[in-house]
Image (cartoon, rainbow, N blue to C red; front, top):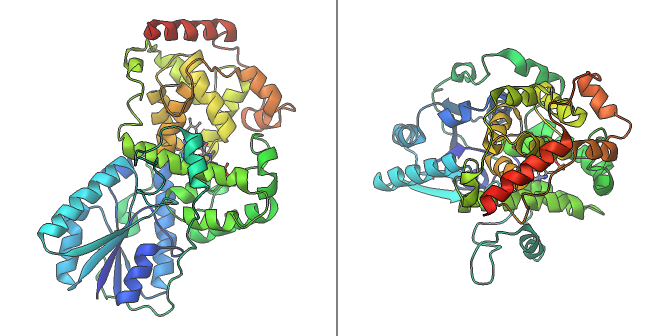
Length: 432
Ligand code: FAD
């Protein structure tokens, strides 16, 4: 059988279920399609551009051309099937809202055209129908979901066979013609911090697993320490397979706290599937009436890292400088925006969407709704991080703050006590 492999959030060759299946059955061709939705995320597009470059190279070494297109998959895929006498299309599932819609539309078109296809489970640890409650309902609270996940084992990664046959195709667009690199060149700074692509991702994870995984629990909350794995952008575009990461980590000692975070990622995907508007609409509907403020100037100060709260400012500057922010600081900065400044969590989610190299719809939406207390898991609205106490606890010697703010001198734009009281009063209004 001649197979077209549609690459999506799986820009790698290891543990690639769809590609493994295709190779077993005969010659393959490969394509990646860029959507308008992907283009809205500047930092993530920079990562995508470089991931495609590496993947093109890796496939080329096996004699396969990675076709690139910005046409809708529903039009370009059937055309290729016809031109190159292809028998089937295969891909790995993606879990973003738009890409799920894209997949549904494609299945319909392929069915109507009588073209066979297979969607493999991708970008998750377990297939969708697994890890539900006994009555089949999905979990909405993390802890029971986590406990349930611990009764299952993640499958061993699949290996690709060595002999490849390829279908000879004519290139569509070149990588440069796709114009994925953002117009403003702020992304150039990222090159100093990151090397996108499969090989770099594997090395990054291996180093963490060899040197740091056992200390993860102790070190993960200190933004100055290199205590976390920093593989999130590699997972976003599937340069690393989350299953392969979990499988490898589970063979190390003292890895449970790390594995638990990978299950949070899985939980986020389940939440997004259940609530496709997770990134824009609060789960608890009373928050539609919440008296959010509308201050563009406070929002700009937050974005620029000029709130006068050193940990928040350092985080926002780290984001702008490197395209990434430490998880502890994401929580503090997000809490500051939604509680201290009382600005809508969706504004913050949008800013992260534009600037994070690891932007991931499910994790971002869950992270913001969790911090804002608008309905994810059991996180309550009235938990308000104190940015000064957080600084004392997690950056007591000020090294992280110094690195990113160079100890800038800005007066606090709000008083902590007053802001806290204002946030709690606003919450009382929707509770009634
Ligand atoms: P590690 O601590 O090494 O964890 C390993 C992996 O586990 C991560 O790469 C990630 O895939 C997963 N993980 C860890 N923590 C979480 C978590 N809390 N929720 C879900 N998955 C987790 N993560 C993103 O990947 N993309 C986002 O757009 C994103 N937006 C966020 C927004 C807010 C407001 C908050 C509070 C968190 C957000 N996160 C997001 C989750 C988390 O901050 C990052 O996954 C983490 O900082 C990535 O760094 P790491 O790879 O070193 O993580």
